[in-house]
Length: 350
Image (tube, rainbow, N blue to C red; front, top):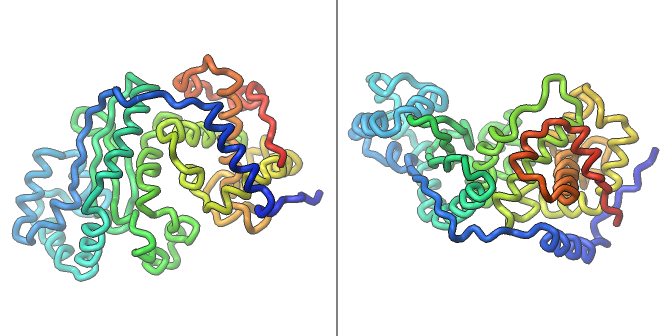
């Protein structure tokens, strides 16, 4: 079957109309009076910004105040030994004197000297989290320089509460040419590296948190399980960041986002006709639910993860059909087929 995927040049008015409809259909609660308490620890500024002679003192302070983070950072991220080990301290001193690290420190310091906008975005997202999930503790934030090892990670702090680690060196595009760092590393592929920006930082950090809420896809899951699972995650991120641009939410380019809206019916028809939705063969559908430059079988203008976009639209339709369902209930319901059937999902026809 030939799929008549549309170009993006004739649907701009439809996009504006659709976005206005979305704003009407999904009211945003007023969370301005909700109090949240959390700390932001700028640990990127306390270790590598220290004089080499003060690194041991800095590590001692870290071990006292942030022992869990210190262990994760040294052992799992930097691949070093315990903070009390003299060899570890010496290695950190050598890193601090390395010209490449010094250059990275300078770029991070320049790019993130003022993080007031990020603090405001996190604060509001945590207010929405408290509104929808009042029982959840708000995580503290820990920023660091990971030496291009990891962008975000969730961990339990000394009190057993969630905490979010953020590697600021993963949010420096386009000043940092990530692909040039290691052209063979798929993490630095163009379609991923273009999202390593300040604009994506809060969304990516929150995704680490939200991942834990949504849980895992069932073992031997079918494509529909991944579609619904990832759709839930996107829907939840949108609830925590209701003003987020679609291109940031879906991690598409602007034209790719527009293309998905133009071709939602065609994408859905493609999945049905190719017998993908209920397939358990990961090799057949992974390109539609995991990041990629484009979706196989679709035009080059398409993004990867078109299945996740459809999953978001299905969850959106389900919640519209069932306004009595709370987000906690949605997350607890792991029956993907049931959610699809009860959503009465009908793709947009342009």
